[in-house]
Image 1: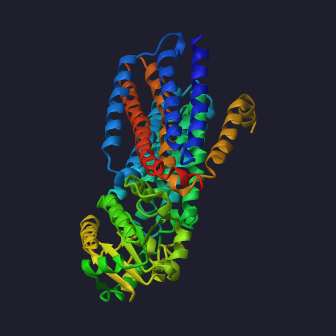
Image 2: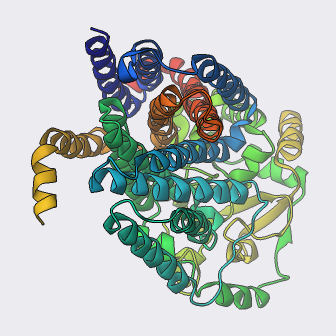
Length: 464
Length: 112
């Protein structure tokens, strides 16, 4: 009786994940889609708590389980509520890492119990769950650290060979364990665990910070697969379908993100090797010929322009300047200036990051231009105002094959009559490379925090 | 080879589920606007938190005096819950902002 009801709970859970994910890919239904998945999850968890009957009796340690759930809920909900919009990507990475850790812990416990009475395939799925889960955990933590700016990119010569070697070692140990028919020592298992943990770190460490969204999406897919492995182990359909669904959807999403940057996944994962040296040398020759514009002049040229395009970037997000940015846009529009926002798909720290921010500030959807339509409009634009964006407007992506971002489609702001760049300093952007744009004759720099600068501009435009 | 064949035979249903789910995942995602990539990733991230069911089973099957398993399981349930709850809440917060932006130009949103 209980078992059949539980099976129905899992069925409802699985279906709600599918429907929820489907709804999440439509702008209008996305929020309800998220709630649908959450409801399905609640049914699956409650069903397990109440109806799961190992060996005919209710779950042991129920008090401990429920208190762990309460602790987790408090931590998760507080973290998710307190996090600033700018730090969302890190948060997703952190949560993904938690899922990976959970999968790894389950595998560690299960392997201790297994040894004699499970089939090879079960051992295989335990090992796969542990390896993938640990890689996902440490990888996500590194990605988190990078987005927080606490961990720098590290790459050494031949690192991909070392990575391959570690991976090979993991596979070999796995093969030894599987063929040993349960007689392997604990030591060899823990060395496999240790190698997986190290591999996660080595895997993410050399990848540039700007590519972290792609990496997080990939690790997200990994955790999905780890979940599916556990689902197979317990013959649990909701974990199996949920895990596989996220695994395949995450893989596709990763590829779509790469496409948005016009790069292949391979290029993102190993592209950072060997290109670090040339960019730095290149930059030295460029220094020293940028010019500044005063706030008054900037307000003047924008107030009397016909068309202004605003290019938001991470700097806008950091300064939380989206509201005052909208205020400036509205003000100019009331003065008869055509104001549009040019959104690069990977501006900020994640695809869609800028859309989220500007939506928060009530910027109309009609004023947002995607990459291609924006590039068509730059030619007829009087003033482009770049707010804390850097790599997404770097012309090196078009004309410098030695640049790490070469090949990425950019916003071709140089086609406009005047480009005003607001930045806090001349420091290079997230990819760590110089930007020639700042030294072009039609570019002027407007240094300062985006929020303060925009406030000043609003006041000055009002006085025009 | 023989073990593989017998494995496939005895787990045919699971294989069907896996293969169909793979295609389903690809199909569900393939036409998503780039604006929604981040919330979608975050939502999918919350869904794989269903791993928590596994950690509940681990703890529920452990005997009350096996402290190592209890400790690992306890930690697993905590981090699993963080994944689920945090994932859904963050996704909801992201999408909330889309909504406020979409309500106002309600006539024009249909055009696209």
